[in-house]
Image (cartoon, rainbow, N blue to C red; front, side, top):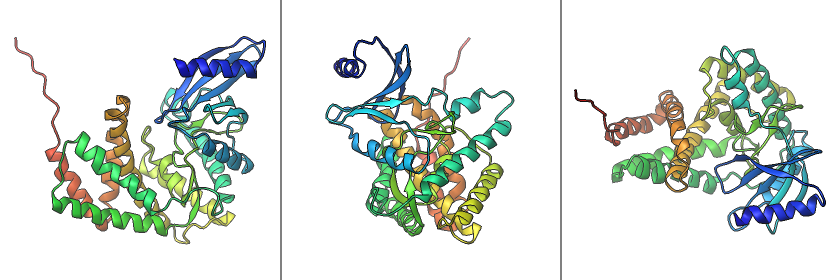
Length: 339
């Protein structure tokens, strides 16, 4: 409540003499909150990022970078980094996820157009990539993300204590994943380029939640987009979209592998890293932050992980571990009725 009062007072100074109302616009997996500011002249978005938990600086820097690239991101109309408040243009309230779920008769051709637009925007961002501007997606960061899997998903969610042998097997897989990730060509990486952060706008898409952007593996955002934790696409369609991206990227001079099969392998292995991280994050959001809705999204991510591990012999040890943990995880109590 105190933060909300501070935000209202800050907005009153931005709109002197005008009346406005605030309504929740969205929340994400961090401490940030977003409010829609409704005035007679239109709507804006106010970000509340408590400075003791969030830093507005990266949001401001990445917004400028992506905007200069030609991507449609919110414009910064006012900011107070000390208090943790930003006033942004409003990109609307319809996410890709909502648009696709509301479409009657399945996803249809609209998905093709939306994802073509998303790839176009991603290519624009990747084309302006350069080292030394955003933090490196380095071994330390990639490793920290992987550790979320044993710490939160295995130990906390599945209540499994790893044996010394399992720890060694898992560490070996982690090292193979890291070698692949670090060997990939590098570009600007949004890190959460998926259906909940892409908005249906003109021009399309509007891009949100980019403040954690880094300089890292070229396949990463494609994994976020096509192996989305919130919506499933069959593998034939994903393959078609990936080929289209790869062909465009080559024509534009982006550093994708010359052989598509090598690019697809990088995409799959990058997916394994992301899915391990996401399972850990979803567990942490539930047990630490009380955001239980993310548990419903775990099965899709688990399925992605199993399928990728099943296609590469180097990942066989992880698939075998997943099978073992499936047997050992706590079972939901069965409900019976007596008459």
